[in-house]
Length: 241
Ligand code: URA
Image 1: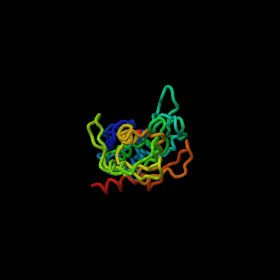
Image 2: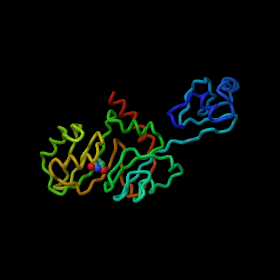
Image 3: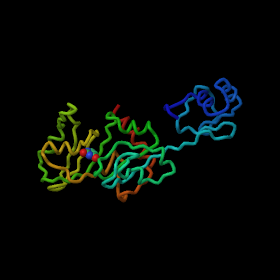
Image 4: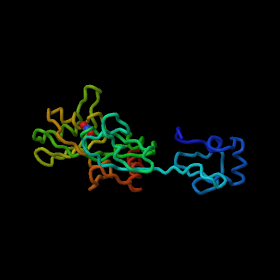
């Protein structure tokens, strides 16, 4: 299904032998069942994940899938690549071919990557207005300095895009290690932020996106998200409206 939703009569005419004009009669005879309930209007919306049954035959049973992967280094954040292993190559899932990535990590960045077949969810989780914090563990080539905290909290100017980054929270863990939390995802953002101090990022590992935490998932392993993790988008949106 290309668009987000179909009107029921259009959906039935596209995916069965019946015409749009037949749908009123099919509804009156209770021959169409949507998510377990008889359809009651030609204008009902059918989404990619609506369970649709016509005369006892299932026309759509696509299940939403939400997965996390602990991305190892040296893997491309893409679904296809001619040269390198992609995150999709690491995934075994019955709906693997439907999945897309929710944001990307650089080739050598490790950690939490989200994949789904739900385009609406991935758009919502990625919207800057949703402001879901993303936390990274960062190792630097040079010792960290306390002043970084205030600079990152104030925002760093990126001349190329002519933007100042949103306030970011830096927690210095040791001389060379820190935890950085961002509410956005500009191109190479973490590396460029430390680049302001000429301090090279030598390793970068994403540990969480909002309340979705990588935990002790092994590198290369996947697990489905819980219902609560999926619903974090609703909570974040409500908090920002
Ligand atoms: N920032 C970076 O610089 N790289 C990543 O992979 C993610 C955030």
